[in-house]
Length: 510
Image 1 (spheres, rainbow, N blue to C red):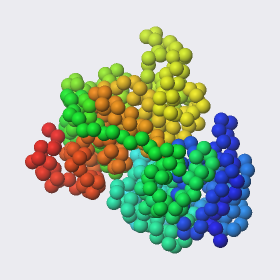
Image 2 (cartoon, rainbow, N blue to C red; image 1 turned 90 degrees about the vertical axis):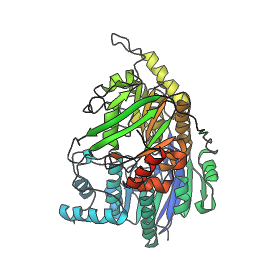
Image 3 (cartoon, one colour; image 1 turned 90 degrees about the horizontal axis):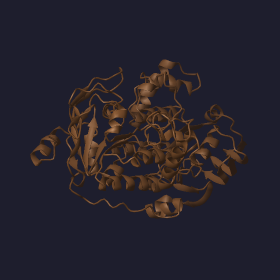
Image 4 (cartoon, rainbow, N blue to C red; image 1 turned 30 degrees about the horizontal axis):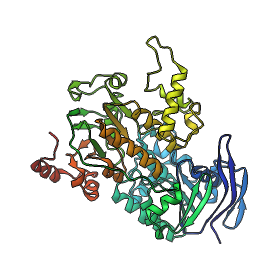
């Protein structure tokens, strides 16, 4: 008997048919990948299974019995749990309180708090149950969602991009646990854009394109290229990352130390590195180790940095506002798309005004035609699937909104571009487009600092790598001389002996 069977699932929105007659079968204990480019209909389908969205047509059978799942609470009662790509957490509550709200009330809050610690240790997920969610990074929030789902002991676990916040070592540990769950009969629907993961972990793969099923394959018998062809109709373009000599120092950070702004933040300790013209410096690290604090200091959101600790072209900018830093050529892409990178209810055209002022006169008048033209050019250049410049930011899939936000800053022609998580949740085709544009910007002489938890991404596009752990920065190492195992160890803060060696070979920062 099948654990889950969908027949003819259809969902129509005003501008798009998200799901078009989808059939899906999941067996007990099966790890089943759902693969598709951004906007292919994966998230809508998962929300239908989880009861968060109702289909216009089609049937769902659960353990051989036809059901209509009217709400996530009903789904959880049936034994279905889901970890969303966009999180459903209350910012003012603690991690434990958020988890408790998602469970039946058979357990008291102190018991839930204790269980969170047990599950977090078992799965290698670092979660502090007493921290308020507003103090957590995006990656730490994802861990809370994963732990909440696992606490329900689900028969079907839906995971949307679950490994983007983990070190390579922690990914392996999670895979061991998922295989254990599978062996015990738990079915897993696994959404990921990491084709290597799907091939290594999953038993079966259903491919969606344009809201329809375009193929079902055994991923262990496929290559990355063949999966890409099924997903986007072609192989993603190969990036050309040629080694080149870097230019003059654009941004220098020296002796940057900042106490945490809240009890659960990370203190930055004597951060020092530089970024040169025509190079990409990649910053690796497990979420919650000071990335948020560093990005806030560099972008100007946190203006407590000591005088002289941050310079741009030799000029002290430690006390400059974000707007003044943009005027001087520093552009920034935050990790959080909705709420910080874009205002959800505003149109794409209006969202260009957050960081682009070309269409605003000195007296404050906005040339609306120019704003629309700017948004339209970004949509076209970065292949953003949207209903035009007037589409609300919240109406776009996560990957398409990411393309628009990254495109908005690249299109500005920055002298220094700082990007946090450039391709988080973005399909392979869109990721290749974004990474290609970042490399073009580098080749045009821009300095780039890329913060990412995707090690494969950092190795693909970076010229040098540094690691942040517990608020401290490692020495830099040329990407060509680094290994994933070495960087994975450094992400745990284990670079003391390596630092000595790097200094001896001239690879450490001055």
